[in-house]
Image (cartoon, rainbow, N blue to C red; front, side):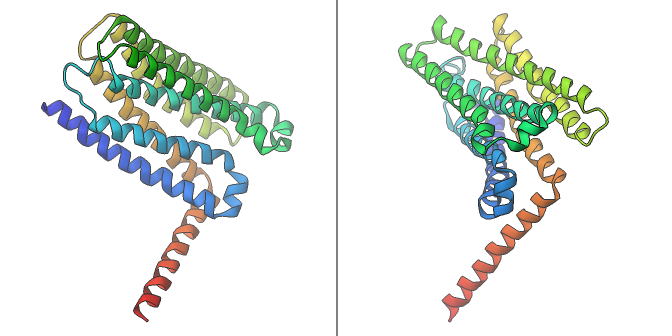
Length: 268
């Protein structure tokens, strides 16, 4: 195992642990705190998807990345799925924000099912795309053939299209909400999407189209930037909502109290 592979191994381990901790803590708070569950139930979907992303990053750390397996196979299937799933999630969130900006009456009066519907559709598309990639990979019987490479490249193309669509929609929201409380959050997501999603995906697509070597290194870097985007998104969500911070504190206080009670009962 080369030094570069060792470096990515530890980076993937570190990233997955951090993402598990951040997303798990927020998801637990959403489940435990009734007020948060009622107000931010849509965000619970994000934290679930982030946990799936963390699992993919952890898998990437332990999969075989020798020279024979970096260009195709399950390594590339998972690697291509990480940014794709996150971009689908971002697209669903942008749809939700757009409804809040352009149709606030519908947004506030719509049922939870209606608001979650885009996320469910996005999850369905993710499952279908990942299943297709896996099927194509299995059909190649471990050989890196043209169909496998084309499928992976198509997945990155779709990811780039989704990310660009999100950036355009966020730009429209910026114009719409220029003088409102939405300005800072939308600016944050626009900058994060451009720097952490669009830029690395463009690099990957260019590298793959011109058939440059070491494309797997660019994919690894893109996956780690997706991790940064996900954690930054969750962190800004906590920073921007006082009730979420209070809910997190209350949740962990409850756990500490329960732990103390159990310890005292065991001692008794």
